[in-house]
Length: 375
Image (cartoon, rainbow, N blue to C red; front, side, top):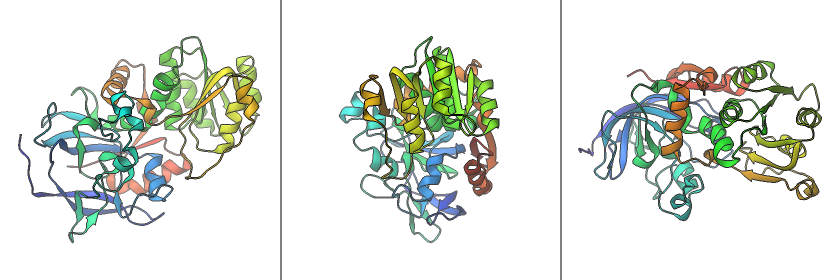
């Protein structure tokens, strides 16, 4: 299997400075080494995390090529790659070392090297693989992919093979946002048949959780949001009840629907007051998952006795606590069976429309933007 030391010209969207628009420019990327794969990106999702990194909620160095929901076709593989080959269709997901205790236990989202592999701005030694046309390095390896570019370098363990008959341009968001919402329900909270579930937030992650709760057999599925169009879509995707928290008291509404409190809830807004309210809406022995990402240092308040006396639990969840090699193909299969219609969340944009896509995502006009590449 061939590798190259040459550089390939690519088109990339670059985040240059805090809060500034992405710029589209030509750049160069090296070929794959060791267990790396070079992927021709067909499309990539735009996620809330890309925008909060652009805005420096997390200290990722800039200028940087972001993007972490890529899908594409393997172009070239490194000499240590075992199971992937040129021509394979892949979804790119988060980076994990593959050999620490968490990874060995099937919990790669809690990898000892997670922050460095996904937010470090380069590989674990600080090296980058992309340079601009003047030969200056651009920070990359974002989520071990940096897929806001026409070609991306990933590792074999975060390039997940998917069937050729699945719509590749649609699948990128399975690598992060949709995997997060669905995995939180199925893998982390383990929502069970006949139970009640509330999604606090009806964005792409929250609606993915709604769809997963239906797959898991929950019989009361509540979507909470302030945008009526999102609540209407939630009903279409499997919610049995909706709550507009701008119009009614969310806690009281959930307690009435569930006769005392919900069994499971997922907080995806990143708003601490929503988390606090959600805890109070849990029933006895209820469990709350937290996936919303506010700025570092954000604090939330709640009455400790509301946890203690009701036996309630709260847990943080990264990437739906999934094993991507198993979970992403399962989500693809559910989609192909018509049981997980995440395509209803999506709107396509070209790469040069990335700033419009970001604006539409922030304003709520678009739930899940996907950027398509013209090769």
